[in-house]
Length: 151
Image (cartoon, rainbow, N blue to C red; front, side, top):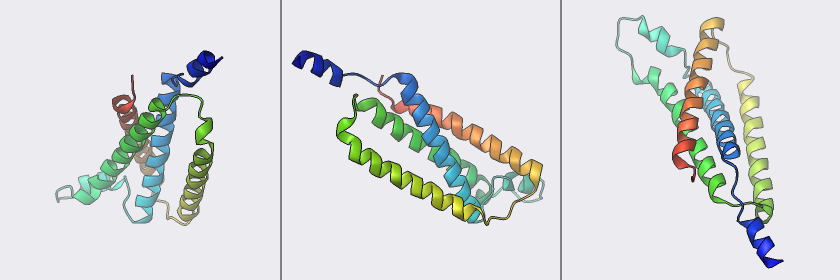
């Protein structure tokens, strides 16, 4: 009986679960970073606005792109590293999972409440910039998860 119980505790999490969870966490973190940057006056669309001006592109215009991609890379990498190194079943981490889940829900609710009062920039270009930003965040999230997941 002890041998069966020991084999049950040595089960590894499937790779698809590790990568999909890490990617979702990275994209949610990128969306949260995008909301916070927008609240502070940094928009992803500002790169195209300053590209047509006579001056050089400033760090203020490329900073949001780097921040969104970097947050997605770090969060998905940390998530993949944590999930791939802890074997199933996760019964012993039940309280910790509930605390982390409640903290994430409160954080996302706070971000959603603050994003309701943001001024919306022009339609098509802003949507395109945000979708491209989230695509880059997804690619960086996949890279972060791939580099840190235990194989």
